[in-house]
Length: 169
Length: 333
Length: 118
Image (cartoon, rainbow over all chains, first blue to last red; front, side):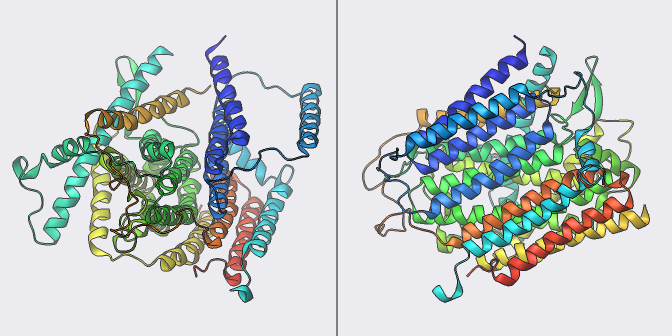
């Protein structure tokens, strides 16, 4: 095994363990922190893949923004510390079947697709290439602009849902 | 491979040592400068001119009892100060202290390393720094601590946006995210503070807010929250929070120097690369002095003013700065 | 794996040790005499009333929602800014449109009062 294979096994298993703990730990804040640990594991796998940009974006967006949002949401709920209810609902088998189905279909898709492979070596300045193709009319300019519209829709939606109405105060 | 690991170990040890010393004497300098500005003597008993005061403080703190408040979340209570320290140290890894030098037959970077996504890395580490504070507030089982932690985290995420937007100017001018690249690009033009005065100002203000330093030190406003998120902390855990704050001060000053004030550039650096470290240190110390001066001069903001300033003044200004920079580059070339 | 990240990994390790060692030394050398009164929640002499983990203002949540949106925007702008000098004029306009649309979002949040800390 090469060094990067060993590191991959290390990071991947750490990610899985953390992900398992997210759904089993009772304390919600601890669960949120295990989620952070799991996301950190994914970022380190991106590093192993030589995708520095993706690794840092994973940290900025998922750990630095979305997980913080989750932590705030947990703090907004009552009785974080004393939850003693059952961890399974009556319909857990339905969720399990859905999860297995999704896992099976996703993994077959990944298995069957012919992935384009690049020769090993320097991939060049990926950030520069990404920046150029984001605004290139023949590449991703439409998704890029739609992303901004999507963001603004998300902003308006979240404000409409979360902002307490003036009358209720 | 082994060579790289050894190089990394030596550099990390050196940087850690430098940061520890910088922390110790920064606290001393702050007390001394505060004393001079308020016409008193400041620490002057331990050693000549009180120079051994930081060592005395360190020894005192390590022998202090640690109180673990009843009802605290013990694991997180222990983890929070560590999580505050780690980002403070790790963030300096991408800052170049000088040009490359030849040593023992190999080219050595002055500075830990240089990532091609350096600035994004800095933003990433800065965003992780929120966790230590939020967890300290939450795990203490203390109302002051929780309020302070929440305030601090809401403040940090608010100013992070302005911080991120203010560094887009230098990126556009240099065309790279690597900090070494940005410094070298300033060699051919001039210091970016001349092209980006607004950006530099936004960066400094947002940086102060990100550090929870005066005048943005709402999370630890003594009059309302005793000590904010570290109310329940004592002994070494308390001093780790302290260390984290001061090391982050050094880091923000170093980043401001690199992005806007030419980093290690100065006369004769191309002939004597080691001189770069000296220039870099002088500029960084200048920023540190500025931060201390600001703390001693400006009163604290009210919390709603602070949030309004971040979202309604700094953020639009930072967006405006990006657009203006874009237009100027198109017309000036 | 890029060599630069080995440095990052090692300084991460170093930072962890650097932060943990003083705590360990402290637990060894410091006295330990806890008692009930000492371990009570510090509230300037008053006894603490009720639960600490009470429900918080929704305002914190709204600010972090708006923050997520703008954080995503910044991440999109970074590669655009890197490539900026090598882009044709058309692409520059696209970037400015992207910014203006999101500035519209900011304006909306502002007018709705989502940015007011009441």
